[in-house]
Image 1 (cartoon, helix red, strand yellow):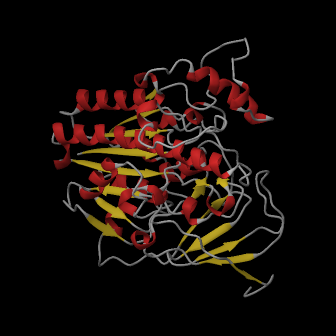
Image 2: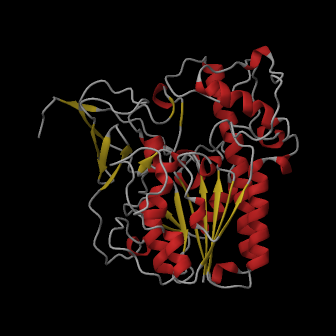
Amino acid sequence: MKAIVILFDSLNRHMLPPYGGADWIHAPNFSRLSERSVTFDNNWVGSMPCMPARRDMLTGRYNFLHRSWGPLEPFDDSMPAILQRHGVYSHLVSDHYHYWEPGGATYHSQYSTWDFVRGQEGDPWKGEVAAPDIPEHVGSFEGYRARLFRQDWINRKYMTEEEQHPQAKTFAREIEFIRTNRGEDNWLLQIEAFDPHEPFFSHQKYKDLYPHDYTGKHFDWPGYGRVQETREEAEHCKFEYAALLSMCDAYLGKVLDAMDEYDLWRDTMLIVTTDHGFLLGEHDWWAKNIMPFYNEIARTPLFVWDPREDRRGERCNRLTQLIDLAPTLLGFFGAPVPADMQGISLCEALNPNAPKREAVLFGIHGGHVNCTDGTYVYMRAPPVPTTARSSITRSCRRIWRPCSAPKSCGGSNSPSPLLLPKGYAR
């Protein structure tokens, strides 16, 4: 048996066709994937943001309840390490550079082998001492993001052709692994795509899918905060995200092509998901982390093909999260699931006779602790914020009513909060 996991970063469920995304989004391969797999309708984030989510995925446990961004702990039970001990080869190929910097280190070394593609965002890749030639209309950032912005502008100079783009290189190396090892058994391939994480840099053929008149500044990298840009600028940035999403769709299609070419559907599990969503002006916010987690951030896409079940074109409404991937993959390969894993196998979620999960948790360390039963979200803010990015300045409880029919409403939710008095229902 074999398994392929594709984890995109900041992939918006509410913009994907299988989840009722807007008809102007060009993502035919996500529709193709949905027709060949089970689409999960009630999948939620766990620990936010990037590396906390990956610790959830590898360990089957929530990260955010006891620490913020950080490495695997010495006491963690790691899914790829367990697989190695039971004769399953694992390979990671990624352009997600946080794996190779302080706070992300120790994750990649859990795999049998790994491959790192350079150049995303502010990855300190190409060394140029001279200041980059940035046109005045491009704009800039202050503080920490100024360094990332400068380096990103340098990195882009080395990506003038699509095949030089980190995402293109990542998927090319993934296809190489499949071709090399298609005749072997007992392997896991994990593909980590940094895209469509900001900055929303893609090549012209993807931008051409979204023609629009725009005469404003270069803007494909929103800040983390309230929307301050003009409507024209905000709409342009949304189109830039859509173009990058379409690029992700195109490279997803290459994996599906390889599955077809080598008949991997008969013995290879395929899981496609993301760590979290991203606000593109909805609720007057950009990005993630500092606001309460609206559904555009908290509800995420998940597609699963299990060759043992041969279930395709179906939908599942059971509660699921990233912590479920570790027990799912361990069980698929016949490896034991440690007792301390909090996730459940996605195969169990697909079993109509299995007990239903009552609720799941999600949040960011020092911010809201959220609990959802899939219909309502209970939000509990800390009395004193303990994370530098938190903008919450008071203790309150909120209940959100998420959209329960993503296709009928386009998957975009704008719930109104019910603010309850402090101390209510203690």
